[in-house]
Length: 109
Image (cartoon, rainbow, N blue to C red; front, side):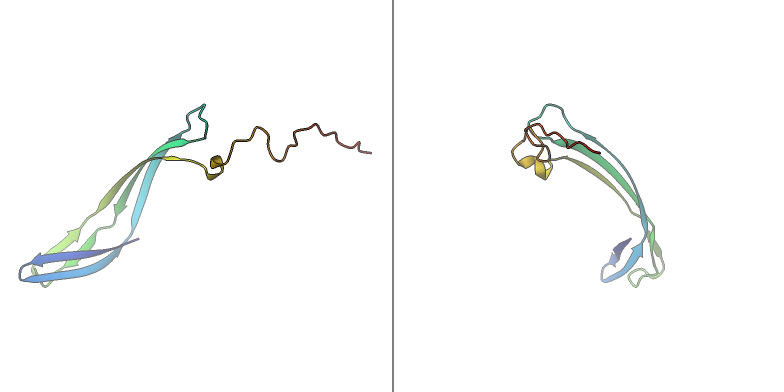
């Protein structure tokens, strides 16, 4: 949903109205984690396209003999990188859940 303001300005008269329109978005993206880095970093690129419903402004005071249709669509491209927060701590060679010494389980009956 998008609330947009529609303006028609023919000097000396200006007209304005608001309209709420629905939209739909389709997108795709790609992420890549380069191997052999000291810290895990993921590079990404995304693309989104949004189609919005047309908004109409019929017979505004600035132009009473005409009707106006406002059409809109948006394109977004995002490029960046992601670093996990837990990657900022010192790397550990053993997992905290696994003790560094061998553990034998008790025999079961």
